[in-house]
Length: 301
Image (tube, rainbow, N blue to C red; front, side):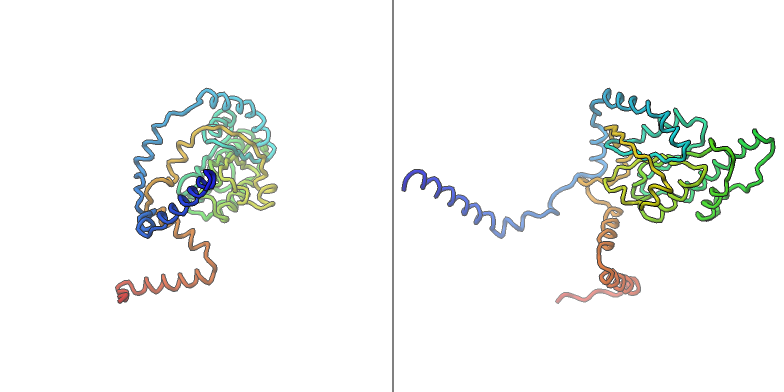
């Protein structure tokens, strides 16, 4: 056997030896994902908070370049458009800076969509109340009389609050309330019903919406009517490359040990992915289990 054949034979022999040693039952059973020790959630968050932000000057310069667009954004809001900001990086500072610099003459309501839960009814009430106050002041200054419209009430239903927003008609075209929504694609706002409420709010004559998105599939939340008629979006790519310091606090960490809430959410996702027949079976089993809490299970042997 020449040296080349001997070398090739050696490679082949080592390959099969490695396959045999890797297929040993003892080694297979020892490789379990559950044996891996995951870092505690608080420890991982503390370590992440200690990481220094890089390229701060470049990020600030990028933020400054977007400030040149503030006058254009305000003009588009006055023309009954909504503004939708997308791009890599947190846009929270950018939107709040726009509000404090360009919207000083208008009422502003902020909705933090990155929170685990958002009270959409309370948000609509805040918008309706602020708009009522703003229009009352405008009418008093122009005509010298008080508004006859009824102020909104926190006990009203969502439908009633939306109706009150639509009823707030005025000749003051330059009078509106701007609703800033951080992460309109956030988990708390992602369901179709909430998006419909937000879209109906956005198409009210004295309401404007400025929102940000971060999810790659965020555009799937809306149909053609919502995009072009109700929200009436003007899309802007405003990559800030700013860290998600605030938004990340409320998001579960993949590398951290799971919590009960995260486990429940995972179970719901799995159940929603099942067929209707399978969901019906699980529903029957769950109802039986709840009705027979004290009943012990049968022994396997």
